Amino acid sequence: MEPTESTTGTTIDTTTNELILDVLVKAATAHGVHEAEELGGVYDEDWPAWYAAHITRSLADGGYRIVRTSNGGL
Image 1 (cartoon, one colour):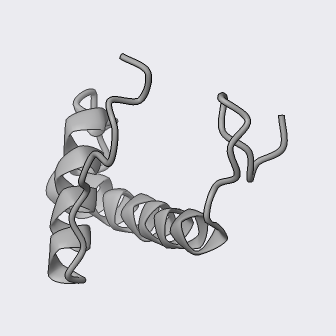
Image 2 (image 1 turned 180 degrees about the horizontal axis):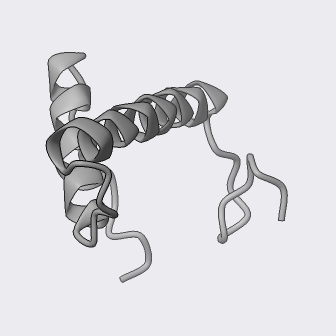
């Protein structure tokens, strides 16, 4: 599967892909600072929750929100 193709075979919007990539890269950088400065260099066992909160906040600050457009085959 190509990175721009979903599991259902539909094309993924490259702008959306670039936005998510940018947010993930920034989250990774910020999380490294968080571990170093706030956790004293200790591995963050709760990193998924930290990433989710950081990404949610970053998207909201950028004026984005995630809205389901269909039931996704559910």
